[in-house]
Image (cartoon, rainbow over all chains, first blue to last red; front, side, top):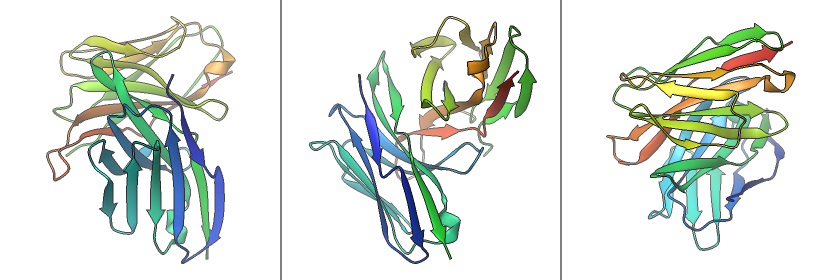
Length: 114
Length: 117
């Protein structure tokens, strides 16, 4: 059974700090890994997706990396802002029944205070 | 283009009742998957449909069922509701991103918040 773990579970930082959120998975047969943010009571907003053949993806202040051999992905947030406050979830998709099923981590709850 | 639409957004039921939730995927997406999110268990996969066929199923009791129509819209049904079924139910559609990434991207709806009393 695939497992996905996110560390830390919670993070509180002052505005302007650079952050690293970690996601680890137990199965190297990963298809892709997607990072999401979730605001309280809302759905998931996609941030970045990394294919298994890629090493990293960048979007604005966000950079995500993938290392299949070590079973790790990191999400780097540069110059954090209060608007970045949310829960960040990673989802690793693995082959199953002709498709690719995501396994989610429990998330990192981020608070950026002014 | 329109995103994933889930209805209803909020609903309250009592134990023993049944509920049906609806999901309209992004136009052109043929895969729809459903998830249950609770504070205790996090996000858990329920099932996935593709071209009206269930392709994968998570570890949930038979009270949880779903179906997909020819226009890719999907419904999930929970019968004989229990207090523990209170959760945010999320639907996602999956398809190929025609942008630079060309990747198979999961896009989520806003969810249906079910409260069972």
